[in-house]
Structures are given as structure tokens and as C-alpha cells.
Length: 207
Image (cartoon, rainbow, N blue to C red; front, side):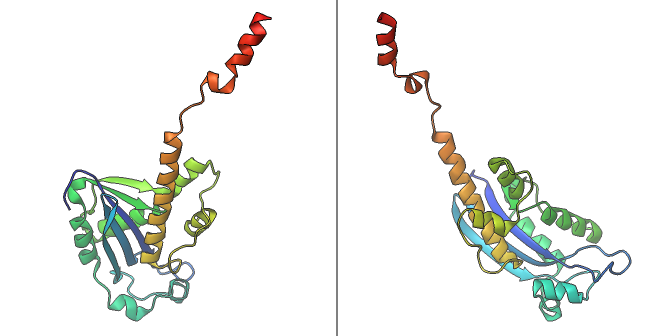
């Protein structure tokens, strides 16, 4: 990927989850990835894959039910090492912005890399769009991904908790928020002359 503009990487992971308290030492592992990379406002790449859990290889019933992901799906997925290698290929020398909804995606990716002794693949800027959304609209609490897009009068893409669909929905919200920011930045502050009819003021002064 060439050019000086940073590559925008919209990414979503789905994670494994335990049944109840889960086995001893349980930690969430990435089991699905979806991403869209954008260069110069043009979508340049989409990627979606299931990922094999490295440590806790069997998905819990709760996980399968909540995410609609089967054991066969993850068994046929790519390895974590292959995922990290692919993500590193998008790093663009650190000239990138990784955009997620919430901070869990990067936290879990970093934890999974540490556990597997793999290098963390990104070195650019990280944007938690849920916090950007919260600050922009002055919300007290963080808003869920699909609720946020519905507040814009739009629908989410595809199915919620499907990694590529959630990454695409994040991209759409990013575009909407940036459009609103751009609009507000173009608005010039009102001058005192626009707020007061100066001809009327002059008439009062000469009376």
C-alpha cells in the first residue's frame, strides 16, 4: 500500500467464551476475524476467516450458541500465527489507523500474541470509535455498535456478532461521524453583526 495517507483498518474479532466459570486459566481467544482496509477513502481490501483457538480448542456450548459458530468452523480456520502474519502485512510501516468499536479487540489480540509469543502486528494509531462516538454526541455511557448505527437512522450490515459484518458496520459509522465533524468544522462562528441588526442600533443611537 503506497502513498502518504494512513491506511484505515476497520477490524472486528469474535472471541471464545467459557461455560460458566470455564476451565482453569481460561482466557478469550480470537476465533473469527473480519476487516476492511481503506486507502485514500477507497476500500482496498476485505478479509474474513475463522481462527483456530490455540489453547482451549473446544468451543463451549454457550459460545457456539451466542456466536452461531460451530466447532467445524474453527477447526477449519487459520492459525493465530497466520492471522498475525496477515495483519502485519497491513501495518504499512506503522502509517495506519486501526479502528475498532470498543477496546476489547486490541486487548485480546495483544493478550493472544503475548501468550503465543508472537509479535504484536500493528504499530500505528488506535482509535476506539465507541469513545469517539460518545465524546462527539456527549453520551454518558458507551453505546453498542448496532444501537449507534440505528441512532443514525441506518441498519447494521448483515448479522450482529459476525466479524466482517461488524467491521463493515464500524466503517459505516466512522464515515457518518467524520461527515458530521466535517460539516461542523465548516460552520463559521456567528459574528456580532449577524446577531444584531446594526441599522436598527444606529437608528436608536441618533434618537
